[in-house]
Amino acid sequence: MTFLKENYPLVAFIAVYLITKNLILAAAVWSAGSLVQILTSVFPKQPIKKSHIAYFVLGVLLVVSAYYFDDENFIKWKTTIILWAGSLFILFRQVFSKKYIIQDLLKANDVLKDTAPHSLLAKINCLWILYFLNLYVAYTFSTDVWFWFKIIGLFASTMLLFIISIIMLKEHVNLEEPQKSDSQETDSDKNDSQE
Image (cartoon, rainbow, N blue to C red):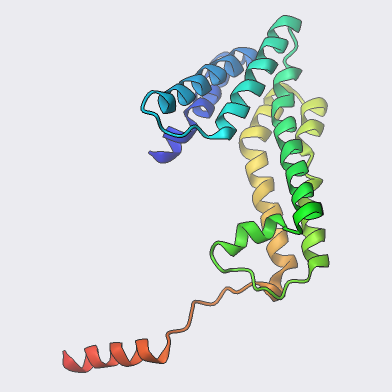
């Protein structure tokens, strides 16, 4: 339910495109859904996610341009612009704060050990920065192929990139479950013997 609540503009985009095969109309419906998503946060005075505002503004600008010029390529640029913005964010974090995207993805669950060398983390960052497949697919293949790539291919290629990153970091990844301390073991042994 949370996925649907968070992503109903995307779900509407998919549904409208599959029914009409009109990318500009589908993007306009997505923009309307994004506006509703923002407004449902405004009225109960909940914080609005900055990403929702950015996606909405970018989406509206590109939908208006696509409609005005009757060119659906403007819609295809949205994903590319978002990927480029993410790449710039990754690059700036590496250059100015010496933080790496894979650390953010893995540190939350204590999966990445502190032994990973910065040179390896920088290489993995470069893989994530060079992630420009969307534009190639948009200009090389049909709109239907691009649509399915956007919906399924980007997710699959992101998972593949994540797996490649983990393989590159295999010596620095902690996949073992945390060990019980001696005090935890003795407490559980006491409970077992009392029963």
